[in-house]
Image 1 (tube, each protein chain N blue to C red):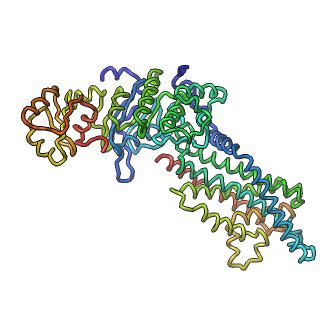
Image 2 (cartoon, rainbow over the protein chains, first blue to last red):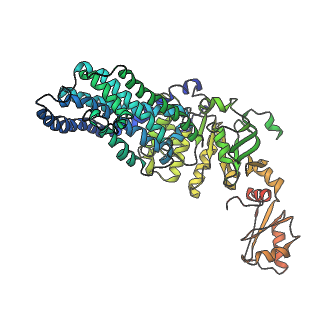
Length: 276
Length: 313
């Protein structure tokens, strides 16, 4: 068989430059589908284990000691559910903005190969973000399903909770992508982030108890955390926790600003690195 | 050169310059690449070849000068230009986790090519790259030569007008290089314009219709391999080795023999049109080199003449 070749006829440049981000995402989802089983097992296993240990275990203790009153008038499992959901979104996006980005720029340099096609640097960044959000959405939906089964969230709050959790996921993913795009090599940085950023964020964002329980000088740790803002929104939307005047919008705005500002740094850095 | 002026220029560079802070990587170069030809950028590492390639790929923006690729402006039409370019990077940058055929299909998708069309195209390219029986292996499990062929097949998935190859055979064994040269030659027959960088003179001689010799960001000479050798070197070269510590002393005695003499650390080169005759006269004069060799002049000699240095240090 000889090569049939019509140089420059096959690709329509106007068509090729469109939807590049979706094509980057398509490729990544395809690669991901190869380990779909483990994605599913972790996606479903994680929330079940968390709800059994925290929701039921700690919850039983808390509810017993408050005479059945729970925290702030709701059973512990309902109190903790929106927090688990938001942290699921944040952890879901995390893996997809860090490792594939290092792979793209440093390890296998796949982004350079992609950028040699009609896909632009900005489209590659958007593609990474689409995949991260997809992965976050998947993890969050798994959690939501389990939470519903445990009766931890009312059915009517499912959609609003999904939105606020994903907003936190986007804000976080965007900032992490901006940081990862700046790394010239991996010097144990991800382990550091896991230990000194993610773990404390999980503990100091009013996840397991109201932030107000903290001494005032520790509370700012929660204020800067996207998790806390999402948790506040989630508690308001799921069981109607009161928010101070205007705070609903403040929480939404904080997460949105994180996302927008993060991407502002992401695009030029992607372009600069790929031009080297 | 006059025949070229009638041909269509697909890449046109005028005073093309790229600076990184204080370092000038490409220093105001002028060249044209014509449709269907095979064009080489020859020079040592750091000559500015790869930087020039990155500007042609429209991922790296020039600092000044003019550059037109397929009639388009790379500064704001990069993705449109790349729709018709095939790029084979120096490091293959394959997805090592994906199978051979998957590497080709996913790449084709970046150009928005339909899956159905890709299905047959991929088989065709696998055959061309002699990788059909490796189609279901992971890219990571291929040999270096096969990975390079896969990278070339990948660069052809969009049926490009221009195929850019950065150091295509660096790191390959001689047999793998010859297979690759054969494949590239066939592409040229299909009407694909080839642009390649290399620091191997034999590669440039085998593959290129026209060459620019680059050093320190500048073009030192331009022409076909034969023209360059004719213009900058003699027909033949006598290579003599007297031993590292003796070469310099003997070189003084040889002054005046041949058209030109070059003293290298390990050998003496004498340029002449009649190599055998010159060698005989040297041996008759009572000098006894450890080894001697008469060979044709090559681009290596052109480069030595132009820069006073060898291509590969």
